[in-house]
Amino acid sequence: MSADFLLFLIVGFVAIAAATAMLFSRSALYAALFLITNFGAVAVLYLLLNAPFLAMVQISVYAGAIMVRFLFVIMLVGAERRGREPEAPTLRWQRPLAIVLAIVLVVQAAYVFITRAAAGPAPAETVDAGPLSIGKTLIGSYLLPFEVIAIVLLAAMVGAVVLTRERS
Amino acid sequence: MNPILEAVLKSAAVLVVALTGFAYMTWIERKFIGRLQARIGPNRAGPFGLLQPVADGLKLIFKESITPANVDVLVYFLAPIVAVVPALVLFAVIPFGSDPTFQLASGINVGALYVMAVIGVGIYGMILAGWASNNKYALLGGLRASAQVISYELGLGLAVLSVIMMASSASLNDIVAYQQPGNILGWLIFRQPVAAAIFAVTALAELARAPFDLVEAEQELTAGFMTEYGGMKFALFYMSEYVKMIAMSALFVTFFLGGWSGPFVNEAPALSLVYFTVKVLVCLLVMVWVRATLPRIRYDKLMAFGWKVLLPVGLLNVVITAFLIAAGVPGYK
Picture 1: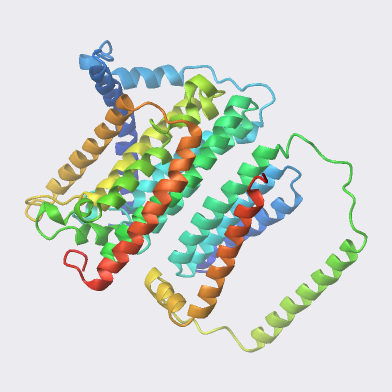
Picture 2 (picture 1 turned 120 degrees about the vertical axis):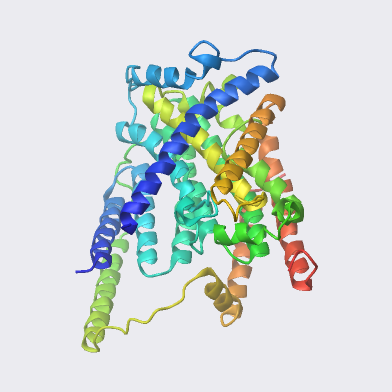
């Protein structure tokens, strides 16, 4: 067992444990903290896969920017103070639908595992995932999707500005 | 030497230097501000008050550890630690000298991004402290901190982006190497003055230091997120602020003031350490000077300045830099 594999097991365990804890924690703030832990663990997984750029982006965008906003909102609306509300009214079709979707996901994952396992382990090729090659790929072969996402994000930004503006 | 042992020893050395630097930075700040205000500053403990940091540290260690009522105990104790760790790990990618013995991991090709990531995470200590303290001043301080830091991080990122574009590398070693055509004019502060100015302002805001110290504005919020903290836990917050100050100064030196470069560095590599230290000290003194000079900015003006001035200017600077580099203007190869 190599050191990398051992590290992978530990970090993977932390990621899964943090994700599970997030789902089951009652307090919004603790859920957010577990999610941050999960993001950090996933960033380490990226590092193990020789993708330092993705690891840094994962930390600065998800753990650094998005989760700070989450905590900001949790603190601002005082989601903790309100305590547990008396069983929020759930939509009746939600639970069966969730179960069906979960089964579909598990079957899909199992299918992939079984078919891929038969094909043998994937070739361990070394991919250059440094900032330069990622930038070239984004602006080169994936230029159109990149621009489309930019437009979508711009539309979302304009939408946020319009929604928060005070009506006179 | 075993690479792991070497890394551990170097990290330990950096930690010792950073923490000693923190202790004596408080002394330098109090002395310097004292002189600027025509006072003497601390002068009782030891010659020139040099033992004052030791006395302060001892006092804080022996203080009773008080936990206020109804706090979220786990988060309350975790927050000071969460505040200190990012401040300390910032030093991992800073090249302190020309020789590889004076560097930890400054060669990694995502060094500048690492800096941005760690700075982004560094805010959690303040937010969690504000939330866990069960105190409205602390909560308001935490809220202000998160809004302020998020706003100014964008400007900081754009300033660093201009530097990365110039050096065409995100490795801090490459950025330092790029700034040495043999004379002082190679420093990026002369070719990227706008980026340097934005970096300096946003760094002060990130550190929540005067004139951007609204996070702990005494007159409005007592001590902000630190209100309910005492003893060693308070000392840890204090430590994170000063260690971050040193780290930010070191980053400014690395990005804009040629890093460890200086005359005769090739002949005597140890000189590079001296140059680096002197440059960092100058930056730190300027920060103290700014604190003694400028009054605090009003909160809405602070946010407006970040979003309506720094961000557009930073974006414009990035675009102009890109044009200059693409056009091959001398000095912007």
